[in-house]
Length: 443
Image (tube, rainbow, N blue to C red; front, side, top):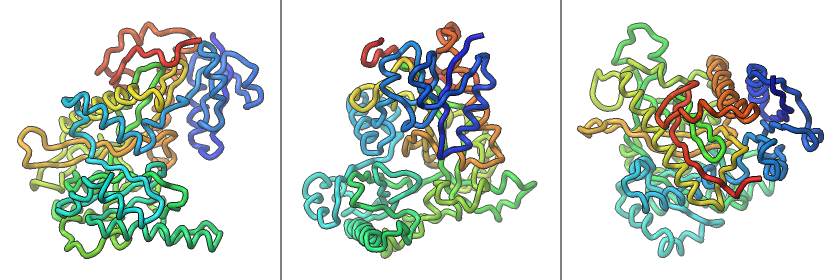
């Protein structure tokens, strides 16, 4: 039996630590756990740990004996403004890519103070300004380097965006004065620490379900209340490079019923809008536990609240969404590979990402009524928010990562991978990319 030394370190994520150790226990390997000091002098070595605890130099200079659970350079994927850039570049070169219609229209903003907007409207943000002047769409503001819902706001006018940045400045001043780190809003940010923002067109045709329908027998249709949700998709990149999408997808629901922004009279926006019907980030709904988390498969036969009456969500719908997600992510990673400064695939690395999609429902579209729209990609996703009910789902995910990414590297067994074609599913993973890229040479 092959053996390996393993550095497992997740100080802020005990559930992840437990899942990693359990996954390693199920492999046909003899595991010796080591600490960071010991890891520098033992081989072979697996670093399945946080990015900050990982010895990236050790991984770089020992390509054949050190396997790590993160790529060193992957900002092109996990920073919202970088992701926007690589997708724009890729779709310009590949106009028939599925990405052309699978990402909301996005603009970048680099700003520190609200009064800088006046100049930006006549320069970098001229196109966004024109969109706001026609008043037809709502937009959502996101900090490029924040997560868990921090700094998200919605607006539909230049004045609304101005008010949002003025609000951020006030909160920054209050924090500097108080020194206690507390804010009045869970989604506040400190603009003195953040310069990069993205503005995305708000998808105002979301697919809506009532998640409580999955627990009711013979529910009354007129009592169902539509709520917005987003898909949380887990994908794993391996070596240089294969990409796999875990075929069990989560649906994360908002805490309150959906209300359309387009129905508003335009008077209130920015800080005055109740974000709860529109934000589906579980980090902002921790008091609700797992009640708003479902598997996408659990929604089969649920009534679609948006659109036509008495239409149900089908197995075919689920398969179509799953296939679209895999195709989108395949092209996203192709786009990232074209930017080697900010994404470098290494032969001795693998990484788990949590990817968020919203599903747009367009009943009047005769060809395709459901469309996935990519929102963001997260490294070291907050899996602990999935909840105890679906712990089995996470245990299986990490077990599959061990089987597909860890074991073959140690025992040098890649025969099965050669016959695993793009589009084929094994170990609950859909293979959606297989590119023979040699990043930065080999050791």
